Length: 293
Image 1 (cartoon, rainbow, N blue to C red):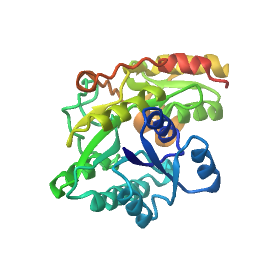
Image 2: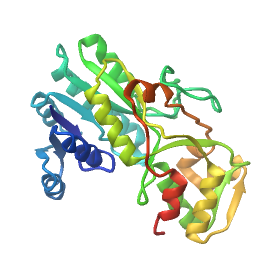
Image 3: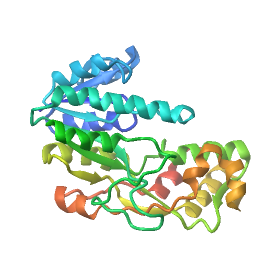
Image 4: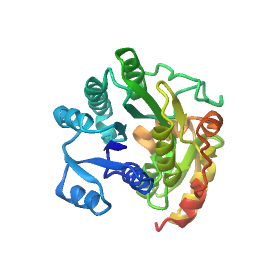
């Protein structure tokens, strides 16, 4: 199968490309820069130049493929609402090309905001309305089903290896800047997590066993306690670890405060059963212990 991958040079997209090629698929990878194009070429990916801002490049990439995996997102949280709109337009644009066909369109979304805080979220849950989180990747993809697009969604937790850890990467930056590794209250709130190699394998399985309308959870650990994360960072950074009140957290974490106190346990039981996906990579805390701070 020839697969168009957006975000192909990124933290998640590049391993997805490697996984697909290892399984015998052909990959057409979106690249913005010469460096990105060279990196993709080095692993046998056919390069398609363009970006999320260039909707025509996205349409032509989708038109040239048997399937599309959309992993790209502009991770600039100072312009989060603007970047969510860019993502929505990109999904819609590729959807116009795929409409009326059975070509798989796998869209990336998040595992947060699916259930009330502290409630175990499952694949059967739908995103709860929340003005603080204007990303509508999943909603946009599901709306395309009614237009004849064979769309499915992969919901991501905190995806990690020893170099990057999703939002925890930003928590590390804040700890360095403020001189303490902090958590909120008793720190028992949890973030789901998965190693990037396991996530890449799930995208491949979701492609090969494609089902229109399916929602998959790329979750290896249902929830890692924020206090455990803070203590691991404290050891790695040689910083004191401190509990903060909700009011103190706002000043400490900045924009991250809206996420840092959330309790987001998430199940992947249905995904594992449906796809035969069994995560084998290191856990979040193991990767944090291996990071070179």
